[in-house]
Image 1 (cartoon, one colour):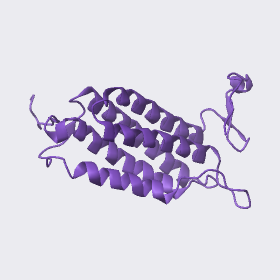
Image 2 (cartoon, one colour):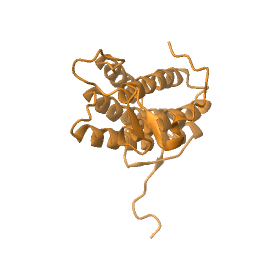
Image 3 (cartoon, helix red, strand yellow):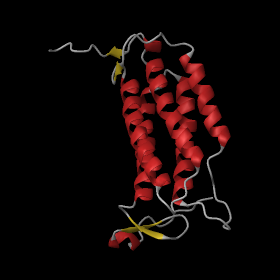
Length: 190
């Protein structure tokens, strides 16, 4: 259980922040940037959910994903260390559930004949925004995992990679199962 009864502590006034392990890092640290970008993705999903009232199944999926993103942030903010008690880590079942959700939504979509531009309904547009933030988070997590001494749960990369796919498919579902997609027309304005 998390209890937050004091919002400001002044400990970050020197440009550092505490990881979940208690270790202090600069706020510009790659690990902090990775979980900060996960938080941005989550915030964009919150805005997208303002536009999913008529799509209860997708809204429920997004609610689960928002909770998963907090799990990912918790996983990232406590680096895995040998000999240390394990903290909250993302599980393979969360990746599998996301794959199931992608398959369920994708089965109803019209086939693509072109690349899709971000747009259509407001909900779809915000999901595209969340998708691009998710891709940035993925790049940061991959870079972090490649650094010596920066352990990262490998399931995080799998989940975030699937999440961007989910957000693409869900945006198409919100665009009348693809009928309302805004398609790219190569060289249309030459």
